[in-house]
Amino acid sequence: MWYRRALKISIIFLYLIIIAGAVVRMTGSGMGCPDWPQCFGYLVPPTDASELSWLPSHSYKEGQVIILDESLRVATSDFISNTTYTEANWNTYEKHDYAVFNVWHTWIEYINRLVTALAGIPMLLMVILAFWYWKGKPLYIIGTFMVLPLMLFQAWLGKQVVDSNLLPIKITIHMIAALFIVALLLWLWYASQQKENATPIIKDGVKKHNYDSLFKNLLIVASILTLVQIAFGTQVRQYVDERVAQVGYEAKNLWLDPVTFWFYIHRSFSILVTVLNIYLYWRDKKKNLGHQHIMNWVLILITLEVITGIIMYYIDFPFGSQPLHLVLASLLFGVQFYVLLESFKKRTMAIKSI
Image 1 (cartoon, rainbow, N blue to C red):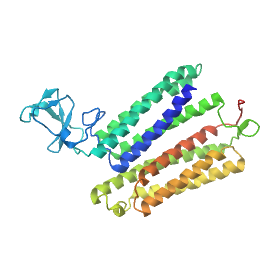
Image 2: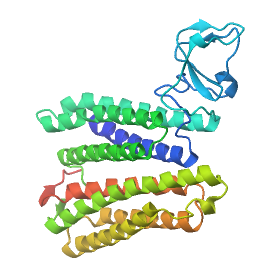
Image 3: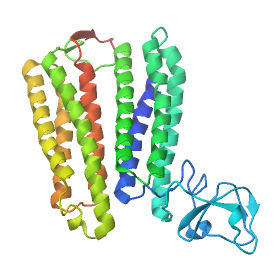
C-alpha cells in the first residue's frame, strides 16, 4: 500500500516537473539560473541585482557568482574583497556568455529545479519499499530502482540544456527523457494494480479486456506519433523563441511570420494523430475491447490539444496557451501508454470483494 502511494505521488510530481518546465519555456526563464546545480552560485537565488554586483570589503564564498562587464565571474575561493576589484580572485564563466539577471526568470527556473529535487523524495521511498512490495519479483524491483538513475540522467540533461544556452536538440531530448520516465512509472502502476486487483468493478465483479492485435499495434504507432509530435513541437517552439528575440514579446502576430517548415510538419502530423486515434476509439467500441472509458480521455485530450494549437496560431499565443499545449501532449502520451499496457493480451481478472 505504501509503495503504491509513493508511486502515485512520484507520477504526480513528474507531471508537475513537466508543467513547471512548460512554464519556464513560456516565460523565457530557461536561463534564469545560468549555472547548475546552484543558481548564481547560491543554494537560494538572489532577489535583487545588487546581490550580483561586485562590492568592496565584502565577503565572498567559493563558487559565488557576480555579473561584471556583461559576463559572469565565479569566485575562486573564500575571500574578503579589497577596495578595488582583483582579477585573480575570479574566473570568467566559460560554458556560455549569457549574463542577465531577471528576478522573475530566476525564481521561475529555481522553482522548476526545486520541484525536480522534491520529486526525488517519494521516488527514493518507492525504491526502498519495492524490496518488500515486489518480493520474489526482481523485474519490478529493477524497474523501480531504474527510476533513480533515470532521474539523475534527467537532471544531468537539464544541466546540459543550461550549459548550451538552451540548444533546441537538448531541450527535445530533455522532454522525451521525462516522458520515458512517465512510461516507466505508469508500467509500475499498472503492474501494482494487477497485484492488488485494484481495477474498478465492472459487471458481476469481473473486468474484461478483449485482445485485438490490430488495436494494440496501431496504439503503439499512435504513441510513437505522439512522441514525434512533441519533438516537432519543440522545434516550432524554438523558432517562436527566436522570433520573440527578433521582434519583441508584444508583436505576437509576428511570432510565426514567416511560418517555419517545422510548423507545417507539426500541423500535418496532428491530422494523422487525430485520425488514427479516432479510428482506435471506433475500433475499441466496435470490438468491445473494454478500454472505452480511458479512450474517451484520449479523444478529449486530442480535442483540447487541437483547440490550443488553433488558438495559438489564429489568436496570437494568448497567455498560458503554450504550456497548456505541451502539458496536454504529455498527458495524452501517458493515457495512450496506459491503454497500451492494458491491450497487450486478453485476460479476465476477478476483483476482490469489498
